[in-house]
Image 1 (cartoon, rainbow over the protein chains, first blue to last red):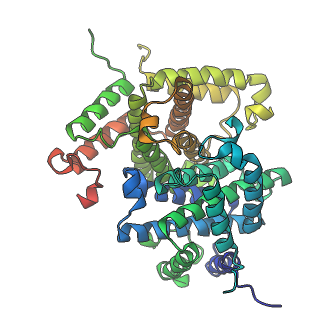
Image 2 (cartoon, rainbow over the protein chains, first blue to last red):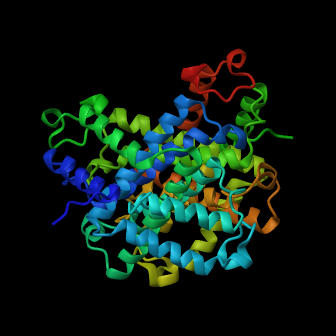
Image 3 (cartoon, one colour):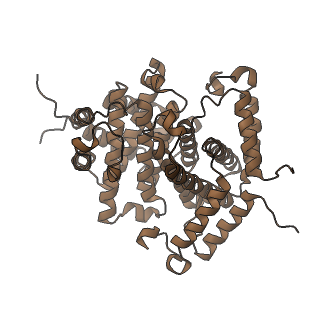
Length: 119
Length: 119
Length: 119
Length: 119
C-alpha cells in the first residue's frame, strides 16, 4: 500500500496521533469540537472586525501571519471533528461544490450575492 | 508540469473558478469571507447545542449528512479566505501542529484540557 | 420628563456617549458591530468548550467572573448594534417571546429540545 | 415589595417561567446555552456578510425586522445563560463599561480602533 501524500489526510492522521499520545480523545467529543471550531472561527473574525475592505485585503505581514495560524486552528478542529464523526471532509466539500453549482447557476447568480432561495 | 492531486489544492482552484465565472470576487473580500466562515461554523454548532455527549457522538445518519455539508461549507470559505490572503493553508496547519507540540509537551499535557499558558 | 431607570436604556445611552467622546462612531457600522458581537459570543463559548455539564454548571469563582465580563461584552455590542439599527431591543425580545410561545406550545414541546419546525 | 419594571429583569423572569413550564431546564445547562448564544450571534452575522457598509447601515425594513428578531434571540439566550450562572448581567455590563473607560482613556483612544494592549 502506498502512503498518502494528500495534505488533508496526512493532517487528519497527525492530529489523531497528537490527541492519542496526550490522552485527549476523552475531550474530543464532537460537541466539544464543534465549540472549539466556532471559537477559532470567532478569533479569525476578530482580526477583521474594525477593518475597512481595503485594510482587510492588505494586512500587514505580522497580522497576516497571525490570521494564517488562526485559519490553521480552524482547519485542525474541523479535521478533528470530521474524523470523530467519520466524515470524509474532502468528499463532503466536493459534494457541496456540486450542490452549489446547481443552486447557483451562472446565468442567474452572476454578479449577485443573493442567497439561492431568493434568486 | 504534473497536475496536483492534493485535495486542498484542487478545491482551492475549483473555488476560485467557481467565483470567477460568477463574478463573485467583488464580494470575496477577506472581511466578508471571515464573516461567512464564522457564520458557517455557527451552523455546525447549532446542530450540537442541545445534544448530550452520547447523542453528539452517535448522530442519526441524516443529521450526520447535514453536519458533513456544514463542515464542507466551513472548509470552502476557509479555503477561499486563505486564497484571498495568499495563505498556504496546509503549510500553516503543519506549522501550527509544530507549535502546538511545543506548547503542549506530552508529559505536561497528558490527560488535561488545560490551556498551555496555565499548564 | 422623568429620566429612565431602565438598565438597558441607561446602558444604551452610556455606550453612545462612550463612543461619541472617543470618535468611535466611524467604526461602529452595523457590519462591524455584528462581527464584534459574534467574536465576543465566541469568547464566551471558549470558556465552556472542554467542560463537562457538571463543570459548566459549577464554575470556579474566578472563571465565573471572567464569563460575566464576556457576557457583558456581548450585551454591550448587542446594544450598540441595536442602537445603530434603531432597534428597540427590549421590545424585540418581548415580541420574540410571544412568537416562541406560539411556535412552542407547552403541550407539544414539553420536555423536548426539538426545533419547532420538527415538532 | 414593589414589582420591578426593569426590562432585563422582567425578561429574565419570563424566560425562566417559559423554560420551567416546558420542562426545558434539563437542556439549559450553561454549556448548551453558550452554544445557543454563539449560534444566534452567527445568525445575526450572516445577515451582514455580503453587505457593503452603506447597505449594512441602510437595511430594507423587512431585513431590519429579521435582524431585530435575531438580536432578540441573542439577548434571550444571554439572559438565560446569565440566570443559570447567577450573573447579574446589567451589573456586569456596568462594571465592564468602567473597566473599558480605564483601558481606553479618551486622550489615547480618540479616533482609533486599536486594542487597548496596543494603544
